[in-house]
Image (cartoon, rainbow, N blue to C red; front, top):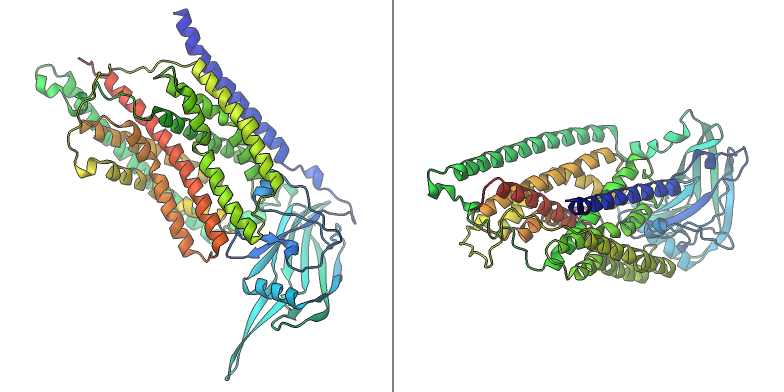
Length: 601
C-alpha cells in the first residue's frame, strides 16, 4: 500500500512541478515584454525614439516591404534597430530616420530633404500609389500610419484621365500629459502633392513635415485605449455584444438539451442492466462490447503523439490567455504575442513529452520512445515546412516576411537544443512515473465483429455533426479573429475570446460523449480514433471558413495567398490536434464511468 501511494504521489508532484515551471515562464515573459511608464518620461526638447518601419498595399497585410525600399529621404547610414524574435516574425524592420520630433517642440514645414527623383524612382512611387500603399512608423512605441499618395480621375467630355500624386508633406499631431507622450497621428497633407503620372525626372523635390503638440488629461496607462476604440466603433461594439450574448444563450440551451438527452438514455440503459428478471433485456447494445471497448487502438505511437501534442497546444493557449489577463499582451505591443508564443511553445515541449510517454506507457512498456519522437514532429514538422515555403516566396518577392538567416538559425537552435531536450526529459519522466491503464472490464483476446452500420452512424456523418455545432458556436468570434490577423482591426476583447474558447472546449467534449454513446449503442467498439476525428473536425470547418474569408476580401497576389493559406492551415491543424485530444479524454471519462456502473459478467 505504501509503495502504491508513493507511485500515485509522484505524478502529482510532477504535475505541481510543471505548473510552477509554467508560472515562472509567465513571470519571465511579463518582465521582459511589459513597458514601464518610467521608460517613457521626457523633458522639453528631449529626443524621443522615432523609427520608420515598413510599407505595403492596404489589402495585403502580409505583403510588406522595408520603408526605404521606396526612395524616401533616408539618413546616411541607415541603421536597423535590434529587434526581438517576435518583431522579426511579425515582419517589422525598424530603422532610423531623418524625422526629428523632440518632446513638445513644434515645427512648421520643416524640410526633411531635397532630392532629385529619377524615372525609376518615379515608377516605384507610382506603382505604390496604384496599389494603395501605406507606411508605418513608431514614435515612443506608438504606431502611426499614413498613405504614400493618392489617385485622382479627371473626366472630360472627350476622355478620362487618371493622375497619380505623391504626398510630400506629413503633418504630425502629438498629444502629451505632463512629461509623457500619450498619442500621435500622422496625416499625409493632400495640399502638398507631386504629380508622378508621367515617366520624367523631377528636380529638387522637397519633402517636408510639421509637428503640432497639444495637452490632454489622459493618463499614460490608458494611452492604448485609443486603438481599442478605433478598432471597434460603439455601434459595432453593441452589435458584437448582442451577437455574443445571443450565441451564448443558444449554446447553453443546446448543451443542456444534449446533456439531458444523454443522461435520460443512459439511465434507461442502466435500469435495463440492473433488471435481473429478464436476462435478454439486460444486454443493451453497448453492454455487448464490454470486452472490446478498452482494446488499444491501432497506431498507438501516433495516437499517443496526438494526445501529447494536443495537450501541449492546449497548455500554450491557456498560458497566452493568462498573459493577456496580466496585461502583457495588448494591442500594438510590438512583437509581444509572437515572442510569447515562441517561448511558451518551446518550453511546453516538456508537457508534450510527458503526456505522450505517460499515455503510451499505460499500455506498453516498450515503444514509448517512438511516441515521443513523433510528438516532436507531429506539429512542428508541418509548421516548419509551411514556414519554409512561405519564406521562400517572401525572399523571391523581397518582402519583410522573409526571415533573416540569423533568425532562422536562432529558431533551429531553440528547437534542437532546448525544445528537443525538454521533450526527451518529459518523455523520461512520463515513462518513469507511468501508471497502469485502469479498465473496468477485461479485454477479450479476439475483437468482436462490428455489425453493419447505418450511414448516419459512420465516421463522415459523425465528423460533420461533431464539427458543425462547435463551429456554429465560434463563427462570430472567428470572424473577428481573422479580421485581426489578416486585416487591421485589433481584437481588444480577450475576455470574450476566452469565454468562446471555453465554450468550444466544453461543447466539443459534450458532443464527443454523445457521439461515442451513439457509436457504442450500435456495438461499434472502435471509438478511440473516431472520437479524435469527431472532435478535431471543427478545424475542417474553420479552414473552410478561412477560404470563404479570403475570397470575400480584397487580398490578392502570390505572397498573400501563400501566407494566408499556409498559416491558416497551421492554425486549423493546431486546433484539430487540440480539440481531438480534448474529445478523446472526454469520451474516455464517459466510457469508464458507464462500464464501472455496470457489473460485468
